[in-house]
Length: 542
Image 1 (cartoon, rainbow, N blue to C red):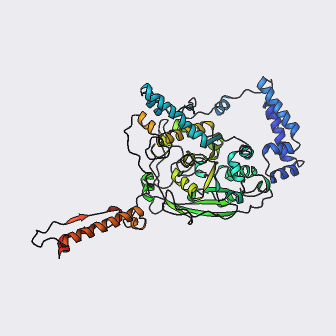
Image 2 (image 1 turned 60 degrees about the vertical axis):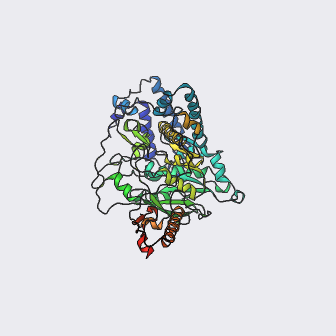
Image 3 (image 1 turned 180 degrees about the vertical axis):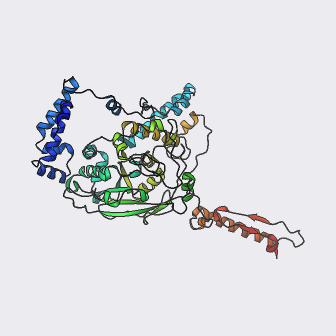
């Protein structure tokens, strides 16, 4: 065998090749590696448990010598230097805005104010950040050892105390919602607007999060589901993960599945909104349903509740129709591609390289540096997540896939403690700025619980009377008679008022003189009742 090519290797590379050959072809370490893998150990733990320490130490020393200018070390090539500093559309030098500063449009608005109102607004700027920092905590995901990172991060945290509270002492049933949304964990490189990226690492990314979160439990629940754990895993429709992949994450070190209960929520999407967003021609192949898996230790036990954002109750497994708003800044977290392209970690980029063509009728996405696009193409908006929190009596949220920040927005609006894991530090900062913009809007919206009249006046906005919170806006029904089945108490009251008004008119018509010219027909309608009422005074006199 010709091994002259080894002479061209640097010392660290030569030691690494020797190390790989020793591991692959030697049977000395098989039992140690098998035991470590069965125990689901991290790579660092495998190296420590097997007799590799001397070889690993030698490689580390050689790498250190290379940094000091070892004569055996080879200088990295130009290609290697470019890979170490990847560029995206020649914008790698861009930096994210300071996460303690409000977005640029808000800063410009404040700077244009006079000194007196500016001081008032600046006070509310600090209050807005305080609201966010009190409820939302964002961390950047490490490149390795995700399980140990989650375990250490959750230990001794406020959310962990909620997970371990005794049910009998709680007085009522509540849950800590743990979210893993594969649709916001990555992005397909080809046709991301229509295609969902595959599950990272073929399910290993999800397993690492689950193991770390369960390892943070103590006592009898160590490495097991806690009494208040509620895992929410959207399946991502037909293009999402397979059930077997995420079920494998809920197994102990021996490979035995945990004792758990699974409830499948059926989510329907608004048809008109879906069509208007994508504008594709697929015939009859549109899929407007999604499955969301709810995993708990015991079957769900909750007090009955009516829906807060949808016409439903938590006694059924149906949610919808969920609105699909257009991709605008009013509804979504929109970013220029030159900024968004830097939010993804190297691990996400490697895991989400999906090629090929999209569905029939889909056009390729023409990306330009300044082109705006959503941070997450397929994540459901905050109203859906707020509904889950309300119906399941959620008191804390652990979000493994922050995405666009819609789960964090729901937590901020509902005042629920939130811990999210972003892809990078830049991703976390951008989500914080998005949340600031949303909270700033709520502080100026009359009738809301975050409203500030002082801020409203300082910004020179027209004073309005405090109104009651508006009812949640549902997608328009596809059929006219659909509104009859979803009428609310307000609609019934309108119907009663209309009936009494008609009765008064009939009574007055009977007392009129016959010689009086017959009045013209009057038509009264009530759109909410979906049926018009026409009163003919000629017929009433007869």
